[in-house]
Length: 562
Image 1: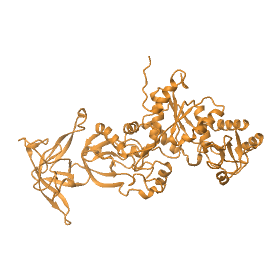
Image 2 (image 1 turned 180 degrees about the vertical axis):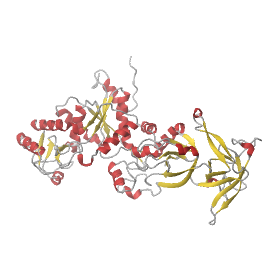
Image 3 (image 1 turned 90 degrees about the horizontal axis):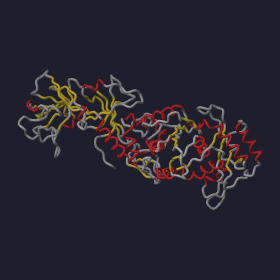
Image 4 (image 1 turned 180 degrees about the horizontal axis):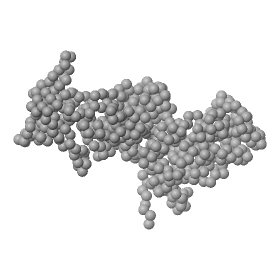
C-alpha cells in the first residue's frame, strides 16, 4: 500500500483530492512549472514561489519545468537567464531537460489566435490606448468597441498583415470576444496581441506582434502538460481568463491555476523595477550588492541554501498577503551557521595589548576548538605572544556600570583559550586615545583555568597574536532601508535608504590561518565563519583577493524582531 502523503497546506490538499479515484488528476504525475521573467535577478520573494513549484513536485514525486517567460522582449536579457538558472541550482532544485522559453511557443500561440478568430472569438480592434481607457466602462457601464463585429475574413487578413509588419505600433490589437459587461474587467474583451517593433533576445526580429501574458501563459502550461499552475495572488482575478483560454483553444491538456499569497518582508523592496532603479541609479553596487534581497546578493553576503529554504518553509503557504519580519530570515541563517560555521578569532577595531610579564620574543601555540557545538570538528592551533590585539571596546579606563571586561585595577579576565590577565594601565597618544593596553598574566592559568581554582568574574575576551595577525577589510551590513515599509502608499522608497546600511572597517586583525583561505570564484558561495563574539562572516566573492582580504558580515550573533 502506498505511503499516505499528509498535506501541509491548502495547495497540497487540493492536489491530494485531485489525485484520488475520480479526481481530475487520477493516474497522472503532478507537473508544475516555475516561469520567471528574465528581466532581472531572482530575489527572496521569488524563493517562495520556486520552492512551492519545485517543492510541490518533489513532494508528490512529480516534475517541475523551468520556463523563461520571455514573451515581453522589452527588458529581457540572456544575462538574467543564466543568473536565474544558477540561483535555482544553488538552492538545490533541478529541472533536468525540462528547460523552456515562452518564445518557443510563439508559432503555436499565433496559430491558436488565428483559430479563435475563425471561431468568432477574437477580433482586430483599432482603439487607441486613450480610447481603450475611455471605452472600458465602469462597474455600472459596460465596455464597448465599434470593431467587435468586424467580419472574420477581415480580422484574419488584418492579423496576418500585423504579423507581416505592415502597421505601426499601436494601430491595431487583437482582442478576445468574451463579455463587455463582465464585473471582472479582465474579461471585458482583453487584448491578446499587440504590435511591438523591438528585437527579441532569442527570436531577433522574426516577430513584430507579441502575445499578452494572460493569453500566452495558459497555452504554454497546456502545451507542456502542466497539471497545476501555481502562481501568486495577484493573478486570482485573471483566473477566469486563464480558464477561458484553456477551454476555448485547441490545446492538449487543461491545467488548473491555484493562487497563493506573495512573500512580503519588511525593511526591503521586492519589485524588480525598484531593485533595477537602485542598481541603475548607483544607489547600490549592483544586483549582487550584499544589501540587496536578490539571491546573488544574499549568496555574496553568506546566506546558505538551507537557511533560505528553511525560511520559506517556516513562513508557510496561505491565501492572505502578509509581511514577514526580516529578522526571521536572519534567525534561519543563524540556526544553520551555528552548527556549520567554524569559529575563528578576528579583531575588528583593534587596540594593542601588551602582557608586560610575558617574556619578550617567546611564542607558543594555543589550542582552540573549531566549533563547540560540533565537538568532532576538533581543534586548531593559534599562536600566542607578548603582543596581542583585542577589541578597543574590551578596555575602558573609566568603566560603565556592570562592565566586566578590562579596566585598570578591575576584574580578572580570560583570554580565549589562553591565560588569565589583569589590566595594569594603558598608553595614550597625543589626543588622549588609548593605543595600547598593559596587563599581566598568570602563567599558571594556561587554558583559562587558574591553578588555585579561584573564580573568575571577568569576561572571556578574544584576541589575535600581533606577531602573526593578518590584515583584512570587513564590511558590516544593516538593513538597506530605515523604514519597515519603504514602498508603502504615497512613499518614494529611495527617500528611506539607510545611510548606515554599510560600514567599512579597515586594518582589522585576523588569526594567521585566515591568510590561507582559498578565494571564492566570482558569484560563488564562500565559506562562512563565526568571528567570535562578532557574528558570521564570509569572504566577499567579488572583491576579496589573497593580498586584500575582504569579509562581509552575514548576520550578527544575536537579533531581535523589530
